[in-house]
Image (cartoon, rainbow, N blue to C red; front, side):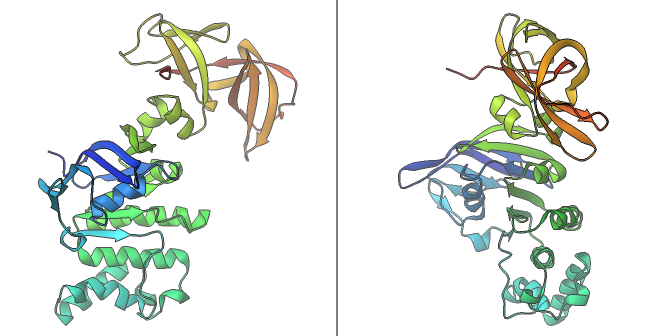
Length: 347
């Protein structure tokens, strides 16, 4: 049995379905990320796990104990989970120490224990020298580390993170992602992380669940999501890709763009099936190969060019290393070395 078990979880607001039969399991100690666009239902799911909302149907269990079900709702304070919000949620009138120590005061821990645990948590996030400061005097990254330290003092089995880096700039995000890895090692908690940023999800998670329109579309390791998306929607959301129509000739070849491409696929497809091919830019090689296309756009990315080609009525993205910059409207040869075949969208 999974440590956290979500089974057919449904939730609606004012007659609008927000979550539609969401089911998945999280292993103990796993860093599990739910990734999806704004409005897809991911934060609602986190609030249900936290007990901040009640489910309409289905069940949520942690360590075999049902916390949410048709006739059961355990309140948030009895779920032994820590929450790191996008807004940090720090007490403005308390010092850093006061904020980090607060869960221990609520738990009525003795003064010596509070001091030792709080000091250790502050050292873990490198804030011991700022212990006397108030939140408003800290940077966004420092405030988020206070929230992490506060979680450490709770020693929760489960930590919920709701878009915790949304208010930080790019450089601070990179720094905080490193902090999350340290936090995970220190807390040994199971982490459920909510984000719309694929770079965050792919860099820290053991597994990623892609959510769209209130449903989990695919749950897999980050590498599998990128290399073997379940459908065109996932392919378009995870990284850059070109989705091209084709037909399987056999399980290793597909006809596409007037020629044949080597493809990878799973056992669910058969020769003769119409498919969609996910082609990543690094698999398109401009300047060589049997295919011809016209350069329609070029974007410099620092060290390479993202080049868009038009061929056979389709648009194909390619990376071209720095050197000779591709010229818009020129005809070029290109080859595709790898493609992942997916089922076509249902009609």
